[in-house]
Image (cartoon, rainbow, N blue to C red):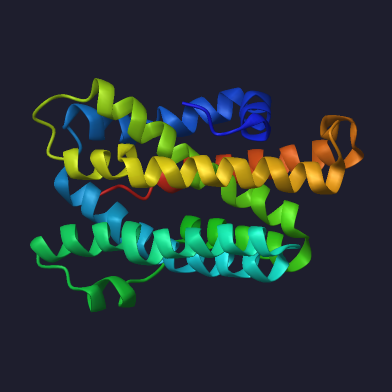
Length: 223
């Protein structure tokens, strides 16, 4: 599994936070099947609301992009979110008697507000790289989690559908595309030796902040 050089470097720079995110108790409980169903449904409801704003942030990236190929890559990610990932949430919740209207009218939890508005503010107040650095942990972290759980999860976990979505070919290709977009965008703007740029540490910190917000988001998976 490789999602590009910038991702690998920023991930390594916040290794403890990244491990807390990708190996959170909530994630591990998805894998071994011990997560209470009510906790999972509460998380899905909040994550649906999160993805509404996350799709807006990727649409903002289309505006912030500096070339047609960057616009196309960001637009493809919007499609993945709106027509793929969010459909997973709607389908699972519908089987539990939770309608799409129920999802859309749920109250956003404070950690959800903090995370999504941080990402959107990164785009409104910063440039394309600021926004990508804030967006990357969610997309690529879920890809990493899905891959790990697909290989290690209990055979009878009731969360196999969720795991298979993020480990699946479509989502994994989206992760590779985002990683490649990130590498190209950084090289275009900061040059081949991007890590020597004064902006590199700033972008790395933005990635780390979004990662910590991901850790907090798992806490919403409570009954």
